[in-house]
Structures are given as structure tokens and as C-alpha cells.
Length: 143
Image 1 (cartoon, one colour):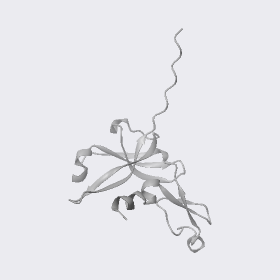
Image 2 (spheres, helix red, strand yellow):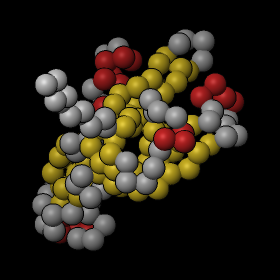
Image 3 (cartoon, one colour):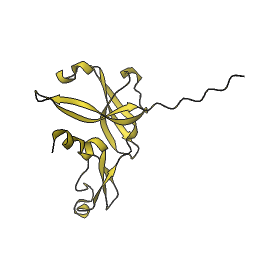
Image 4 (spheres, one colour):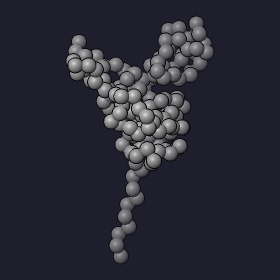
């Protein structure tokens, strides 16, 4: 299996796949094999489920002093996203200025390049979040 195919087929990374406890119904991301609430009762009952990928910014921070591999991206925004399924996910907010990010802002998960590894040039991809742009209202016809 090629490296690109391995990452492309990594379910949680590209599809925001979590787990649902078949015993109590709680949802988890990233997926777990055992529910931390039900313990043994959940063994063999954890079911995969796919998040819709939409949510809203719960809280965020603007990073101004970044590690060297993120030097060209600064300043950038890291946020905790409350997904529509009530799961919280940490991710970078992209495709907008840091000053435009607000608590409650609607966002959508997208797959983007996270970085490259060494001289072999292995590229790592993962999810980030971009603002959901509300459709604009149709213009009224001129009289």
C-alpha cells in the first residue's frame, strides 16, 4: 500500500469518523474501542459514525508566536469547535483573517495539507475548519 493511499484511507483523519457506544449512546471523537462510562458493557458495542463536519466556534486563540514549521502561517487561529453532534474538536480556522473569527461562528471541516516530512517529501493531510458563508439574499428586481 502506498503512503498516500494509507493516509487517504485513514477513516478518522479524513472523514471525521467517531464512535458511538451501543450501550449508552454517547458519541466520541476520535473513536474509542471502549466507552469510558460503560467500560466492559461497551466492549464489542462501539459503532463507527461519521460526523457531518459542521459546527460552531466555542472558543479560540490567535497564535502569534508559532513553532518553526508554522512560521509562514502566523498569525493563525486554533479553536475548539462544538460540532453539530455535540462533540468538541480542536482545529485550525482557515480562509479568513484572525480578526474575523468570533465565538458562535459557523464552520465546516475541510481536508487540507498539514505539512511535509523530511527530504522524502511525505505529505500529511488532515482536517481544518473554514467559515460557512451564508447564502446571500437574492436581489430584488429593479422597478
